Structure formats: C-alpha cells, structure tokens
Length: 137
Length: 394
Ligand SMILES: [Zn+2]
View 1 (tube, each protein chain N blue to C red):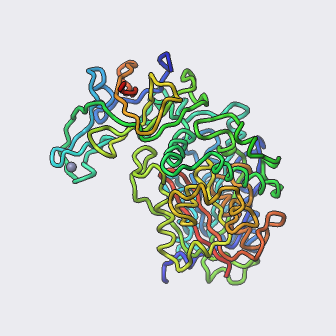
View 2: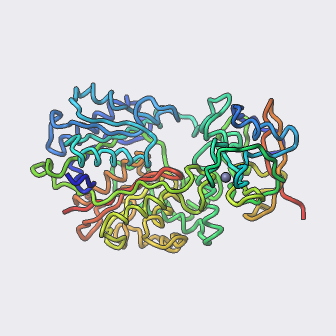
View 3: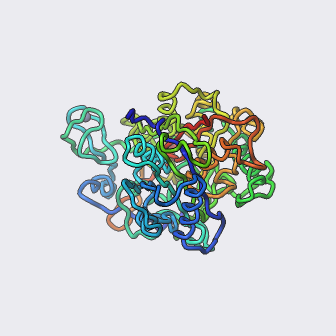
C-alpha cells in the first residue's frame, strides 16, 4: 500500500466523531468511563465493565501490538489494490481494547504477531483513518 | 407440555437442484425444495401450519443472499399458517430451525416448513467475488470498523482467526488442507456436489492465496439452490412416511462480544459457546457422535467447530484432522459427507442439517457412512453467529 487507496469511509455521527476525526489533531481517541476508567469501544452509551453512564472522550498513546493479521491478496473493493495487510491490534492502555486496521510501512513478510506498532493517520475528506506502523527498535 | 426441543423432530427433507448459475427464479428453487420436503414427510400442504426461514425476504446484503421470504412461500403454496418467522438476527442460519423446534414444542404449530434459498451464483453473474460494502458511499453500523480498511469479506476476518490459531497452537496449512481435501473426496460421491474432480495436497498448497493463510480452496463456492425440511411435533409425527429424526439438543449461546474483532479469544468464535451449550442439555457425549456436518464456509470454521463441539481439546484441531483419516467417510468422525460447502456448494448452513438427516436415515447412497449411524451433529455459522443441533435416530 504505497499510495493512498480509495477507502469506503465511515459515516461520521455524533457518537463516533471523536474516533474518526481525532486523528486530524494527531490523537487516537476513545470513550472512557469516568467511574472505572475503562475505555469503551465501539462507542456505546454505557460502560460494558461497570455499567457507568458517564463517558468522556480521552486520547491514548497510539501504541499497540499486533494480535493477528492477514495479508490480503484478493481485490475486494475498486481502488483498494492488494496486497495489503489487515490486522487486529490491541491498544497499549487496556487489554481487549482493539481495532481492525491496516499495518503500513512494513513488508508483509516482516510482520509478526506481538509486533509493537504505533498509530498514524491517513486523512480522507473529513475522516482520519487510524493505521499502524512498526515501531523501530 | 414440557416445552423441550426434544418434542421436535425432523420428518421431511427436500432440496432443489444445486449448481452454479442455474439462472432460475429463487422462488422456483424454493418451491421445488419445499414441495419435496412436504412429500418426503408424507404430508400435504394442508398439514403445514408454520414456516421458519433464514434470512427472510428482501434482506440487504450480497446479491442473491436472500432467496425467498416467508410470505413468498406462504402465498405461492396458499398455506394457512398458525406461526411463522423469518429473520437474520439469529444464532446462525440454523437458528431458524431452532425457532421451529420451539414453535412445535410449545404447541404453536405442528409441522413447520423450514427453508433456506441462495442464488448468489446467478445473481453475481460471471464477475469475481464482490466485497461487502462495495456499493456504499459511506458505511455505518458495525461495518464501519472493518470496511474502511479493505476488510470487506468474511475471508479476511476469518483468516485472522486462523492466523492466530496457527500462532498459538502451531496449526499448519497442511493440516487445514484436510478440511478441503476431505470435502472434495466426499463430493466425488455426491452427484449434486459442484466440485467433484480430485484435489491433491499439492493442488491445495500451490493454489492462489486469497488472504493468508487462506487459499482459494479454503473458501466455499457461491451457489444456487434451496434446502427445505419439516420440523414436526413428536406426537404429530407418529404415522409419517419416514422414521422421524429426533432433535436431542441445540446450541444457540452467545457469551462473548458479538463482533469479529472484539471477540475475546481470537482462536475461537461463537461456536465455542453454542457447542458448550449443546452438551449442557443432553446425556450424549461427543464420543457418541457418528457423523459430523460442520459449517465450512471457510475451512477454518469447520476446524473451529470440531474444537467447539469437544471432539478434541481447544487448539488440538490441527493434529486431530492431520492426514485426514479420522474425518474420512470410514473414519471415527466422518465429516461433511456431502462435500461441505467447500466442494458441495454454499447451501448456507441448511445443507449440513439436511445431510445429517440423510445420513441418519441411511440414504447417503455412495457417500453413506458405514455402521448404521445413530447420532449426528449439524452446525452453521462463523464469527459471532453460531447454532448447532444434535440429532438421533430413535
Ligand atoms: Zn466503567
């Protein structure tokens, strides 16, 4: 994925704007429970951990690790040319806080489960897509 | 009235022609299957007082995903129904059959016509497999978390589960291949199966990669066809044409987070919960099962179902199927005897239940498993969707 692919973008709503637009300011943002400090994702009107109802937007570090991945070779969507890497990453701040994403700036054969990665954003229209790249050691 | 699923049995089976690009009206395929099931049971349309189907009519999704709805069939056959259901938010495709079991067990109906029709092959024409969401300008709901990343097919989502399973347990492509090779061997014995030519391990390992670790042969084949069966209340099934197949237990549980990426254990799926529940409701044990018809929309799903249903320990599915002898027609756990969806065609879950009943009746002809099977399990679904039924021949 050397050039920006054509992405089908998320529909921005009041509930998800913090997530999809936080990247314009360089931040990966989630809802966080004021009572127990758990991050809640996908956005919901209640904390799944303690059932707290007061949730506020909070930024995380953007550091994560690769839980699993696939190197996709099939052209599913016009303008999104394979091969590209799809992964599930776990955000450093909380076990189980996960995103599906693309790993970029990494040769597919260099990928491994457990690899530390960090967020970067790809701006499309009003949406900043959070992607991840390896952390150089 | 005990209200147990054991008050339900399967009394009739029907299936239309199955194929690629049949260019037939999906309602026509549906009616073929439904009339055959009614006839097979020794019933007439006047006896049918319920309908259950998945996913219901006019459901958005891939072209040809929704073949016919409740009212299409009710009207075409002029059925007088006491109860009906059609929907997609269920424990997998076979959740609709579980609904039918509950309807007969609670006395809402006596004979429920259940069906699933697909015509994806014709509807999608000669084009390549389309990604989910390709027609959207913007995507909302659960799909917003995957589609923007090009994760636009279940192939990509399930490939990541397989990859994690490979990582944690050392499962290999050579092991996973056995799901596909076994399906192809069985399909060669099934005249209705779509792919019947021999498939070797070398063919598999050299096939085009779809999404690692999946190659072409790990993915099922979009097809046209309809499968129908009759679920009857046990007392209403005494004098029918064929011996009724008893529903022993069902698994419908969902105990983890219901999405592809938030599921707690990325080597299991909702099948884990449905499988566990199944055994909580019966005295039978996995070792009692004589034939297993387990969903293989992707090869890894069948492996996940083998573990979920306790045929081996979690993580030991690779060694369990290694070499293929154990899951062959004459093995200790014959698997996907009709060729599965991988080689038999995507009858989308219902094909497995149909085949389980065929085997318990001893009607498998060339592909009949030996030694008079008495207990079978059928499952359908992947990711957050999972449902299974344990069946026996009294
Ligand atoms: Zn909380």
